[in-house]
Image (cartoon, rainbow, N blue to C red; front, side, top):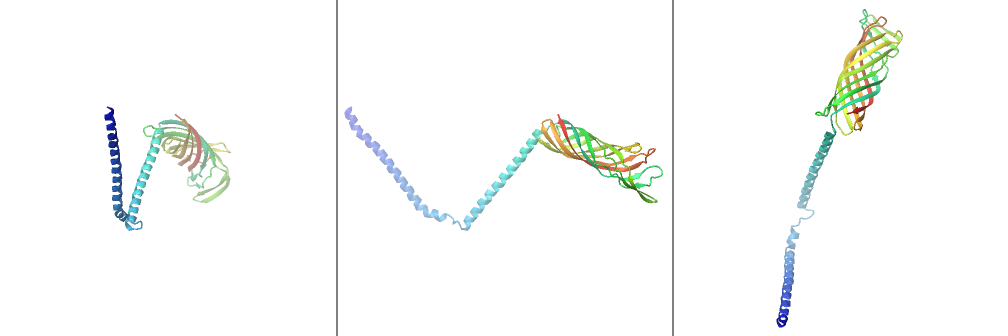
Length: 296
């Protein structure tokens, strides 16, 4: 057994050495062949590379630039659509049906009573110059509701009061026989109550800030009071009530708002009394208001 082992030892070593030697020789031959092949084709490969200042290189560079520009354009479009989709989803998720009640206050800036005509019997052909009115504090309230199924649409009713008193002023009276100006005509107290039974409201739903528009029929209750005789005249007329504003939600149920109103396209008709002449006149006013509301 020992004799066989000593006899086989050299043979195994020779075998391993032969295999390793053959493998190493094979690797060196392969590498030499590959290097030879690469070097053999190197002139052809170098010859095929286009010169950097040649027309072919310029065309390749232009094509690559166009391709990159198209990719950037598509990416920009995709990002834009994603951005607007996220905005829409956010708005859609935060819009909800709601009812609200609010208080409002501000200032009204009335235009002068215009197209004034005396209606007292026997003086119906007499016209009066425009009658200036005072600016006035205005206050009121509103109740409204936005629908769940049509989240940008709502209905509202509101009422507000102002006192655009008639100033003491010079007035010109014109008739068939000519005209006469009376200086320092005494002023009148004027109170106007505006009631809009139904305003149609449009809004842009948002997380906190909501612009809105509204318009509806206005009913105007006007009352004049003579400062000297204390006689009063009243008139009720129809007109336009329109508004535009911004509403900001401080918290989920409380919002503040600021809005501008146009009220008018109406004509008051004051009947004559024992001491006062009757007259008709056009009335228009612009108001700026702010307020706070509770939403539920």
